[in-house]
Image (cartoon, rainbow, N blue to C red; front, side, top):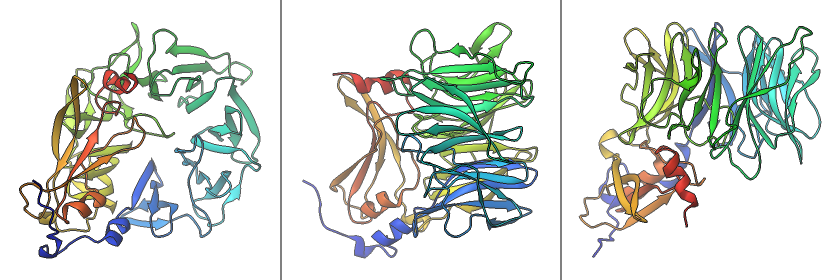
Length: 437
């Protein structure tokens, strides 16, 4: 028998529905340069996304009234802004066009116009590379930030993602896939070289032409070597160009990314001869600076989910959350791991009144499935249970503070937040289990 009484009146700081919604501030897309750190911040009170700039221990909002920075490419969007020398280039939510905004000016100037949509932007050598979408076709284009001149880079595949150019400007890479596949089932890593006439040569497939594998987040290192996350070995792990060919880097046996529903994800970055990455371990997120010999310096600093990574000589930057704090923009010292919270990271509740997630494993279809259990905060021994099911279906839930869950635990309910078969974070076989009948 369950105990169904509502004991919320016994809690001194019961969370209301309005407070739960108001706590839903979120962040995306960090970018760093000598000018400072930039991020996209969503606020639920008006539903707008705005770019913020942090420099010399102060921050300011750059996005003027009437603009919201959000892409709708593939409907889920992502990759909605990038730094472009002394300016920002961003996708405006209302018309889905690209705009250039000088860092010292408040009036954005349109670079594109029409009914096409843009996302997954990347700046290189005076151009912004982007996925361009119309009603029937997707392609990769480059837009000159000075005059808006458009250059077609790639067309013919059904879908594109992650255009990126090496630091020397000589190599162009991207990910593409065809129907009926999804980007987390089968995609290809493509690369083209700059020719003597300044045009890009014929692209070649680096990975994904053989057995099915999912590739995402291509990166070039300082020596123009190409790397990418692939689940060829069972998990999304970093592979790259080595003297012996395209091979795996030393990595934890875990997913280093979630399913690429959105463009512009960044959960790993090559650094010198190693890489910075986040991955899942024992039901919690890890942030580590990994070396070629397999060793890793832990930068998790008490948080349990990490994404949107960036780095400079002094700090590791990320968007992170924990069991007792909502999403925050962090600067973590590379010298002593001290944490600077630049934005977010609050909680609508005192720490002692937060129901903490407990990793769970349960039988499902002759195998095991996973999730997190949150005890009711009213002390009931057999409380009723609310089950949370994430969307996707290849998305995932994480052991972080979710005010919606706390709303229920403060009203006498326990909560199970499930990563059912098909969820990201447990390897390709578990994710592909979604297709079993």
